[in-house]
Length: 115
Length: 110
Image (cartoon, rainbow over all chains, first blue to last red; front, side, top):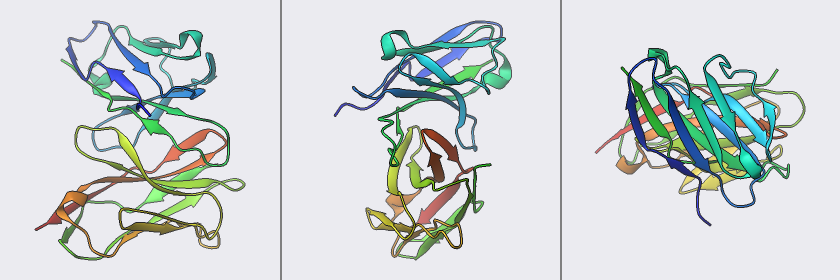
């Protein structure tokens, strides 16, 4: 099966600019996650979708971050305006969500550098 | 609440040495447990998993046993290779929510 696809792989922007990331999950996976991974740390959940509804966005900085999942498939994550501390790798993951310990499948991430 | 604690790194070993990376968890109910590996510039890849007590997950020579009595899921490998150098993350899931440890970097020297 094809894996989780993310683009772009790298992005460099100046602070106060905006940026968007795209994710295409594995076909048939109902649950989609966006994580932020700062260098040297574990992934931190930003937002979790079940189909096209938001399940958990409690750690999403909603004054600057937004995300959507249209038609329950692809998703975009946007940052506007970016801050220096947003420099990180943004990982998208998907899961079958059938219970019983279905694992997360991750994309290769987008490395964002804010200067 | 739910959380994962894993040993801090980096862990530096010589090739063919024995590896143990400790992981303990706190969870309500009966979580599923995972080990993920992350190579430089890549996303996390599932290494192995266990879904109930006493289950042993294994893959590519790595093993981990779900120990409910000690709330642990330690990762082991009998003989590491240079190609095993990566960051290893322990994680648990409850329903469809995942909780990750902070990662342990493994360096294997030839």
